[in-house]
Image 1 (cartoon, helix red, strand yellow):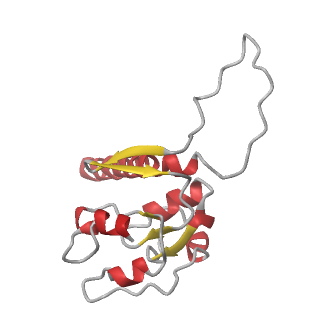
Image 2 (image 1 turned 180 degrees about the horizontal axis):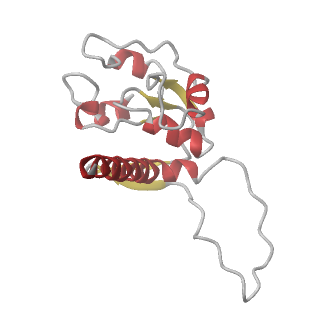
Length: 170
């Protein structure tokens, strides 16, 4: 019984970690919807203030030790791999799934059963996995992405994929 309790606790911890990680990666994208939001009315002295400033562009972030600059919010996102559907679920939860042009994270399962149909509605652009269960670089580059999200170290291994530098040159 105690063993099952530890497993449930670890599963919850992993889900929280996975969600927090995905939100941290995707927050700059989700914060910019491309539409202007009307100014909020003045906040009274007793009301809480907004969470913080809106994202402005150009936006430079540090990604794996490399400076990456976005001149505008990404509009063509490719999700080429992943051992779960966490990234595509995060994009859907943020309401920016319309920016995904190709998604290979489609396994017919989810921690949230209502997500399965939503994930199925995201375009795949015909992405096909190779014998290593990866989407070949040519398929990714053919989508002309301005953001590629990979959450594992091999996601940009030059033996399998273009490096992040190679994507930047495209």
